[in-house]
Length: 321
Image 1 (cartoon, rainbow, N blue to C red):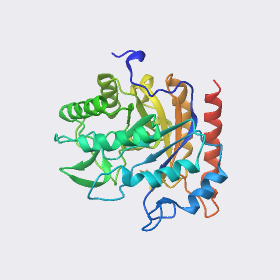
Image 2 (image 1 turned 45 degrees about the horizontal axis):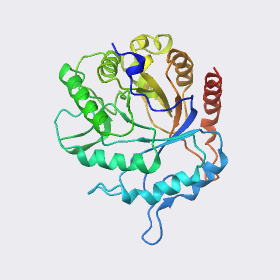
Image 3 (image 1 turned 180 degrees about the horizontal axis):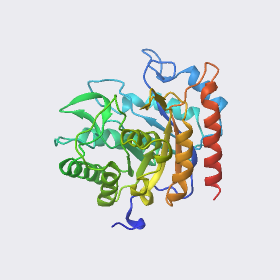
Image 4 (image 1 turned 45 degrees about the vertical axis):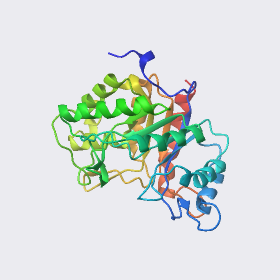
């Protein structure tokens, strides 16, 4: 069993409170603008959003979206990332949601370019941590439409531990492992190991901080039939002492099925679970609202505002403790 002092937490002294996570595609109104002449930048709609909510978010992470599918060159991203971080000055921290670490991969392959690319971004932007879903983002070099959980078998567990250790040894910022999504109908998993026990073993074996995505937790609860009053069953197995960060993104129940839609609208159940789990995580420092959706004026869409405010209240109360 690891001790708290051996866990490789990001170098963050105080609670960061509420932060923002953004998955920013290229050439869309809520993303980066690619320019043939002039510098790459961010959309005007995003600028309006940042102006409207200035001061409500204490840190920012962006999720990697490839600008080019046939090469990995960090310099090609500098202009757009420079513009993004210039639009949100005075942040307490910056982080990066990498999407090509592929920590659930069973096959071994050369990861040196991925590591070099990520380290260049860490150095340029003083990124305090890297986070990625524990899962399969590609198989045999072919990307999958939605990240799949790792193989829930002993061999799958060993492969995850091997991959995580390789990244830990070579990345120059701490790596936080995010609990995988298990959404029925959009992905599937192979194996019979309990996902919470699997996640705990990985944390203990690698001394890695973890990120608990509450939508991903709900996806697993729904898949296991633990809904309604049973929503809190089994959660005692999670590695709370390793938890550094929470993620909340828009989710929805459609015809009794859980859907992790990232549409900006949080479920009541997500706020309830955040209130339940935050006090159980003595080393948590960050709560991320992921992928907000907003109007052309930069205002959060009306359906998202109620639970956005509830989330803010929960986080503000926790941050003061």
